[in-house]
Amino acid sequence: MRRFRRLGDAGQAFPIYLTVVGGLLFLAFAYLAVGQAAANRNGAQTAADAAVLAAAQDRRDQLAGAWIEDLLDPTKWQAIFDGSAEGLDESCWRAQQLAAQNDAVVLSCEQDGLLGYSVEVETTGTVGDSIVPGTENMKSQETASAVIDPRCTFDPLAEDAPEETLPLLTCKGTETEWELDPEGPVELLPQPEDLFDVHLAD
Image: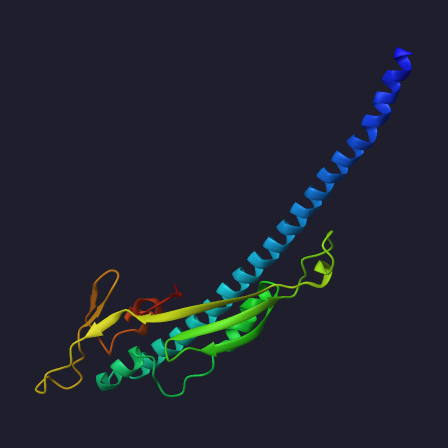
């Protein structure tokens, strides 16, 4: 009789064991689904950050090019450092390019004033199959903004300054003072990263 009671006890415990194991498996798959969604969102944010920085850096490079073109006309320098110059091209193509390299597409790309950009991207990949219905078609969307900060300042020339004299350019970061030589090689002039800082907006 004792043997039969023990077998009965074991038989009663088996369904409980199955229930516990099933619950643990469900939790494991649920955590996996959460992890898949988080990874997809992280990928979207990475793509958005890269895209908006690329657009801002392209605009920075164009502004630096405009400054070199107008090097001999210091009256135009401040406008360029403020983000305004003639003949600048749209920079959102760079955002689209970098988003594609990070498995995403640009839903919107807008210039914020003269020295900023904002983008919204969507991942091309989905969260994937999971125990949560609909995740196989779910994509992630994220936004990012970037700012272009001018790093250099200068004092206007005196009215009696010799012809073709250029102002002394002081740039933040290294506190470098550039004594500009319009006759010297272009390689010795400040580079785009010397003139402007590009970073994600806070």
